[in-house]
Length: 295
Ligand code: NDP
Image (cartoon, rainbow, N blue to C red; front, side, top):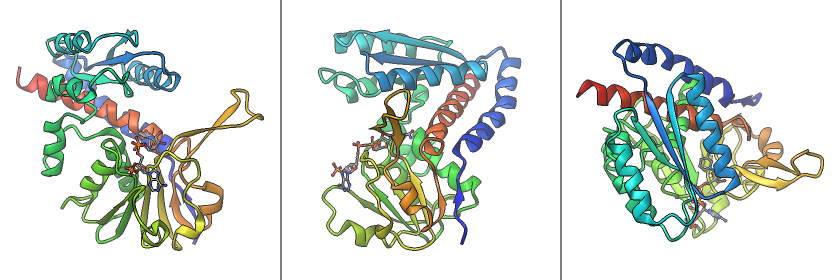
């Protein structure tokens, strides 16, 4: 079987294109969807992500605000900023870029975001609704993974899906979504993590393997069965003297080594990453639609 590369850039572009008529319909009602991103500290990767989110808003002509704060901001000050964004009619989506400095309780911050503006889908209200299969604002990376499968006509129904990684932002929610009785769901899901024993035996069962580990090229070909679908969420910087920046980005999967074994594979970069931003744009538009319909 020839391996198909899943083009996340193109699928993400298609998602943004489909948003345009929805944005135009809102404009006709005098509403411009607005996203506020709060960035605390100077983390270089976070700065890059925040800039990309701002650019994506610009391209779709959404309103966006980036609020940059020093790493020494107090939790109370940050919570006050969120409260004022909750009350701001121009803002339909609020996102606090992770990670925040360790003196800030991230959950307390998330709990302050109005659930209807929680475009990251991290508020316990939205997490609960997602588990119930009734979520409106789904977490962006997991929802982006579902979209990649859907657009590549990969039906997870009845398949063995193995997710390596159990974080609150990727592993757990993607597991919850893929086990739903839903169009892109109905999978038999296994979640593996650092305490899993005989990981390779587990990953070899996978018809669809989702790697969200944060360790460069950790998944090797001998951990997989033939014709597996590989979704690589990992984004890892590794030294590369041949690149101008001095580093390159690689995933959690040994792409070259696993390529032949896969029926489908996502590249890094250009796979899951672009989807995350497009799903954020979609959530911002959805939030604006919902908020404006009850105004
Ligand atoms: P976390 O560090 O929060 O979670 C990593 C998970 O991997 C944990 O559950 C951990 O297990 C598990 N793990 C670590 N080592 C092993 C091992 N040796 N064997 C099996 N499991 C292991 O990471 P995130 O979920 O936040 O991110 C994962 C990757 O995805 C990162 O590279 C990140 O940069 C990337 N990412 C990419 C996004 C995108 O848009 N493309 C968005 C979000 C993340 P345990 O729980 O036991 O510690």
